[in-house]
Image (cartoon, rainbow, N blue to C red):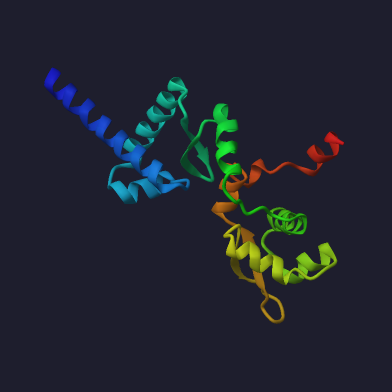
Length: 183
């Protein structure tokens, strides 16, 4: 019985090590389904190992942690050491979003799926270049075509949007009521 137990513990450790390696190297959030495809393991085994990794990383309180983001899990730097990460980022050029780009992204996030014309009606100015820029940055995607004359493209946010803004899903976006309470 001891040999069997030690063998199963060894298998679980190996599965956890595989999942940990995949989360580390991915750089993106990986869902249980994606991990299943990559490992050919059961969702239950993966979920159990991910839960154990979450506990271990939380208890260890090291430089890296695993968090739930965008419907999956991602290895990220520990916020407790954010100042050091900021120092590193300051030494490298970072692509920032302009105010008009953030405004357009917010419109897409809250009104999705939405057409270019609908975005322009809300903003009052052309949105072609900004939508193209957001598509290139993979913060939005083409989500189909609207059933309307001309069949205009519909835009929606992406998984990269959720990751970039630290959201598990769109329900974590602040509500208008939350914005007005802050002012």
